[in-house]
Each structure stands twice: as structure tokens, then as C-alpha cells.
Length: 151
Image (cartoon, rainbow, N blue to C red; front, side):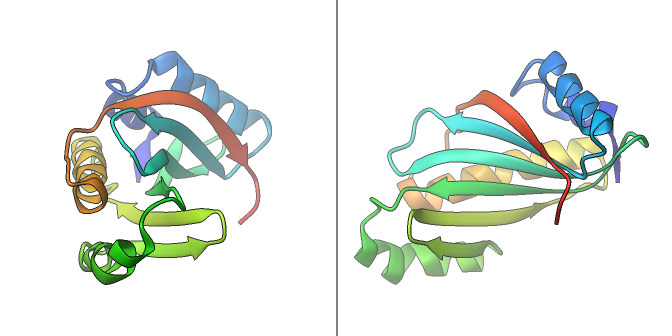
């Protein structure tokens, strides 16, 4: 588990701390158990966005776990996805969900410490980007957040 201030510190290079404070405050106001931080990946052809999903305990300042969701466009070549990309994603310990409007790739994040959380986040996004696009440079731009109260 991580304290909210540790998550804010870990993500300060990706977004302003005030954006994260606002997300945690709103989660407390409505007793939301999930916070989804939305990012756009600027240097990608097929990745439409990245969500950082945090399982939050309202009013405790604790984040229980974190996951990354990488949103992949349905425009990705099907043959390459099915013959190469899917297998490599599974080998990288990703969960892959194929939907009518695209593909979601999920990774669990290490929440043992803020440093491990941050390193794991960048490593897994880089790995996914390398597998899908053949590049590893992560250039994320914060787009906003959403809080949810249901499973």
C-alpha cells in the first residue's frame, strides 16, 4: 500500500501535484474507491491513451493497488497483433482484453514503495510501447481524472 502523498510524489513528473490532489479530494468527497488518471501518449500510432487505475480507500489516504490500462486502437493490423503482439504481451505478464472498439492491455503495478511504483509504471508502459510500436520513449500528457465507487 502507498500513502497518497507517495503516489503524488511518484507521479509528479507526469502531472502537476495539484491535479492529483484534486483527484484524491474528489474521491474523498464522494467516497470513491477508484481513481482513474487519463494520459495521452504523444509519440504513438496505435496507442490511444494510458489510464493509471488506483484502488483507493477513501478518508484513509491509502492506495491499495495500482494498474495500468493501455488503450490500443482497433486500427492495429490484425495479422500482426494475432501472430506477434498478443503473444509478446502475454509473455510480459499483461492481461489483454479484445473489444469491438479496440484492445485494452492491463498491467499490475508494484505498490511496495513509491520508487518501485514509479519505476514499474514507466517500465511497463515502455515495454508495452516497445511490443506494439517498436519504440520505448514514453511521452505522456495528463488529460484528467475520473472517480468511481463501484467494482
